[in-house]
Image 1 (cartoon, rainbow, N blue to C red):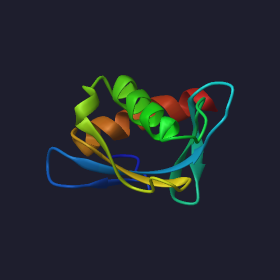
Image 2: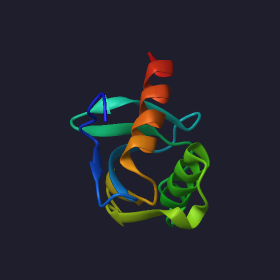
Image 3: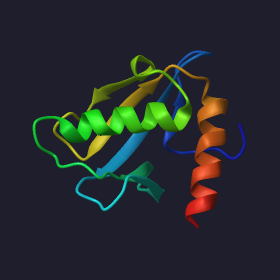
Image 4: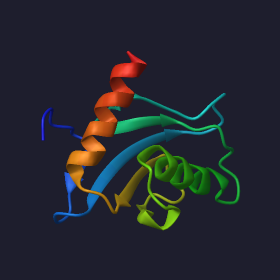
Amino acid sequence: MSPSWPCLGERGSARCLLLLAVSPNARRTVADGLHDGCLRVRLAAPPVDGKANEALVAWLADELGLPRRAVRLLRGEASRRKQVEVDAPAERVGAWLASRLDAAQ
């Protein structure tokens, strides 16, 4: 995979891990570059009663063109730092990262 993304790790051939740094209460949900080895996501949802986590997972699934069940929050339920498992090859998620981060710059 080129380029190499510090926020993306392979988990077998059909899954990958994505490390995220989430900022809730943004105006809109958007991938906003890399921050300390994580993909920074500005999230238009409040961090109340799990709404931000639900919005994050739904947004990622929609962005990647996957069903909601293909994206799972593994760690960081009550933290800004999160680890998400995605049922898609790392190459596919890396291509999405490249398109989103190039558009953000």
